[in-house]
Image (cartoon, rainbow, N blue to C red; front, side, top):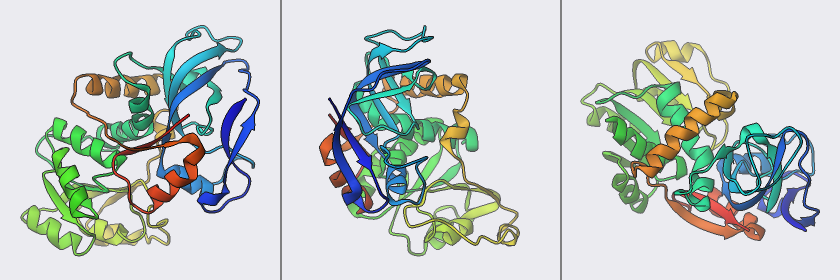
Length: 323
């Protein structure tokens, strides 16, 4: 049997049900993976709560994982039974066994543990998107990163430092400040009060060319106020709720700003884009430039506890589930 977490109705962590179902059979172009680790991300809580909608209910949350191919469906020629693989941004991750389209998985180097891969596929490829594609961060630039001690934030600090940028990180506690600093943040802002004033002081009035805001509603206006003229506001998360009722004229009044809401799925929609991003990500991990932090792990059956920890802002680094 296959241990699976399913949602039958939208709601709080308590709607995550543990069920035993038959092990699925891969169809044409699909592979069956025995998952050794699964990632837990804020997007999972959005689907569980109903902020984002599943295609239908009941449904299995989870957007990333890593494991071993145990069966291949018709037409699959580039993956074989026994291959180590990982994937991002495909619903259905909270399961010991799952089927997935073969073109959505990538080969996992032997040097990278399954647990690490499960903690970096969605986050690491998101950082690749944010720092290398949405805005190409350059040496010597100041950038503002919210949730700098989170799973995405720590990787952003490390990767941006590698690119030669100066990271101003925003965190909620002194403990998280130490963690972000140890991972490459040059300056830390604890709490979200007076952020524009503090950024102005740190940049001698110049402000920043790009803000990476994963918090959402409560920080949106302050984030705009941290940007230099013609700067880019990257809103990529809703931890405090969705940003709504944005007047386009606001961008003009703040200095002809740009605003984007990127989705990783768009940036890795093509197979070659997925492989290119994963290759660069894995290479930096193997070189020790990126040192992913698995802050906490839970048993698959305890997925509800993982959601409680994530939403209470008590986690650092990546959170994973183990079968």
